[in-house]
Image (cartoon, rainbow, N blue to C red; front, side, top):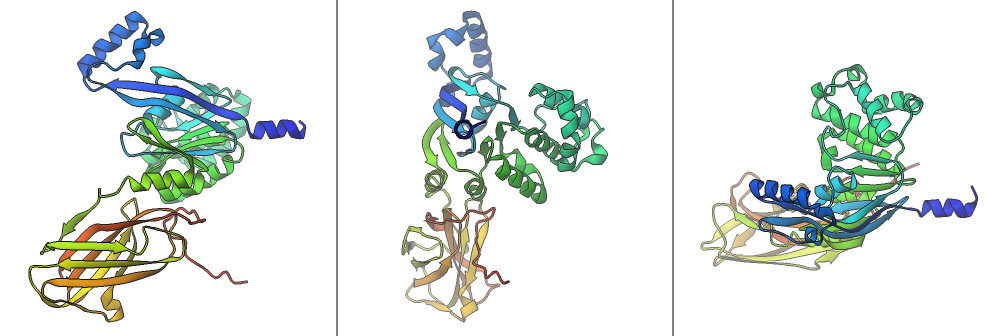
Length: 399
């Protein structure tokens, strides 16, 4: 193969989706009736396939994109956005109502727990079945068998029927089969979340390697994972593409959809008024962030402790601090509390983060006078670092 052929192969379009649409019916009886009518009228060739009937909705609508060898596409969106439907169409599990999908080469997929496995067959038998389906000869499967079993780490259970496997074992075997068969296109859904932490890390390392030679479509609600693995992204909302391009920009657009969806006030006393302002709404990695806030309360307190926490999009706490740690106490005078704090050298990966602000009595163990969850939010948009976590800690590496 000459260099020009290698270059063409490296940029080869492996997945092409053109104006893809799929609709479903919210009512079972109506859906069955529509299905019967469609079969009789051969609706696949009918222009009415692109029209909604009563109680129908578009799960996917006019979706188009291309994916080349060496690219990893992150498919992002809230629950119900159409991600799983799109993956099922790409994997040939359901047919679209309109549009076209063209996929070149061998496809490996893990989109549903146990999908593609015959439950009454053993793990070993299912490996051979899946290999045959994607076009491998028995000799080729023989050469990969031990590698698949080793990766799945289920040696002593490989001859047991898959129906007796735990969820984690099914995920292990499913990913091992999908990845170790050297696919041209790899499709992975959120099902990997079922696996344990160690196995997930191993899977993502394999995906990073596969991304150099195949095309990957990856669905996850974890933006750190999406940001680390994917090069490009699609944001779906109600079945429609609302953003398509660089993964960091797609993550940012996804992040801002959280605005005002997380805010709530808890504690024994609700402030009559509270205001929160940030020094910047979008910051870069390692930049300082200052938060200014004021609360109005119906009565005074002479000595209170302030605290804050920073929450990522998976609702995990990434930062937390109490003013008492620096010997700082505050007073609520004439019902008013004004204060500010600065988070130094914010070392977070790209994405959106929420700030919870709380006021407690006297010490760490005091009751919350109030805590405002989602009092403010900010976006880290210029980080060059992507990791499996939210924090990239500055470290000195010694000789």
